[in-house]
Length: 431
Image (cartoon, rainbow, N blue to C red; front, side, top):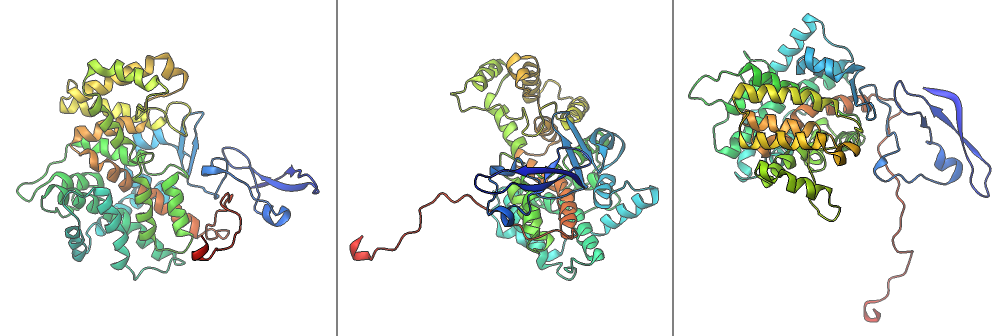
């Protein structure tokens, strides 16, 4: 909301200009500079948009200093402990947690959409067997609009609901098929007797030869991973989805754009990079060597999985994942596994070392989620696909919030041009 407070901009040679100050429910006040260009002929420069609110949103709030993450006002800790992923998906989409009948109806609706068009399965054959699963996902998800184009009237709430249900339901099937194709194993159809996360694990690890029996501890662990990654405010991939959607692009294309952005190692690929780092270190005996390298400003080595751009305190998701990590390792008897012992030793030293404590380089959610997924049997190359599966709920919610906002316009960032000044082309024979 806009308050009566104003910010005054003084520019040499011009009269002072006032701009209204907007106050959010939580977080920093924002100066409304939408009229800046018209009033002054000037624009702001904010590389990375670190000090710019690009939209109004009611979905997710982060307080990095407090280590707080809220979905629709609910603390992530409470949601992860008391709700399953589809309840959280319903919350993000509709603004409130479902009651018992709404939960059942929503889960049944999602189950009805878990199958993909049979012709879509042929898309996989167009990729090399060793293609990265994220490359496959980007292509397949983008192709969904060619199969489900009848519900493209996005001004219609029912059409938006159908698109939301379809893509949330089909992502586990698409991700599992990417894994099966990569390994040369036959695709597994959804089993609608299972819940959302157990069904995904069945499609990932089951075979036509025998009935798959999901381990409830592992299902719960993966379900919590989905919940913790469902949304995270205006991060790079979410902003990509919003920017793509601002042009009126269909939601499948927008989600494909989000997946492509998420693939970057500085974003969703961080947990994959973390496991690769552990493999590079190799053994507990080398931890101190790599800790020393991480402190050396002249050494390019970075300790992946520690610290976070937003959280200046402990990532609240990491606290939850640490507990889940211990439960999974205990369930699978992996407490003494080489890689997991290495990870725990690295965590112990980083939490006690003055350098990391002073810089608040705490283990983040990527550090633990990578360990959990590795223990479950998910290969490193699939980590970001799991992230994308979960984040699709947030992306679709953010997309709908944007296109139903009466103030929304096509995104058009300005630039600070520093190239050559205007000049004339010299004829070829005189250059």
